[in-house]
Image (cartoon, rainbow, N blue to C red; front, side, top):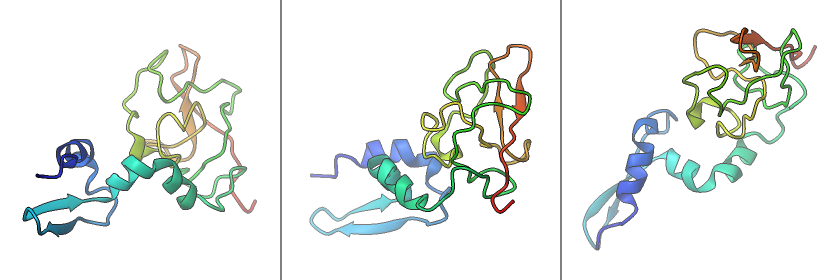
Length: 148
């Protein structure tokens, strides 16, 4: 009998398979001579919370550890001008395309809540968020760099 979870895992992980730089490992299941592709995202599916805790152990949440803001895990949720950040899971008042879990160092869009983050690889430098003000789409956040 073939591995029943193979289709579900591949449909979930298909686009994310190459994102982690680990590559794929082929395992020969001798009994059925089936080759299963195992990728890092399988761990993400089943062990997301545990992996997140391991990957982020010792990371400061009170300062920004990198200039681009990609590693920040703090809970600042107000912009430089005092505006409240829109939740990343929300499409209101501002619609956006940052709805994929792998964009967030927290491990998921939901875990990023309405905190200042930088899920963008090109357009934004540093921490920012969409605002809850319908007239102001996004603003930078003021989080001190670690070591300052």
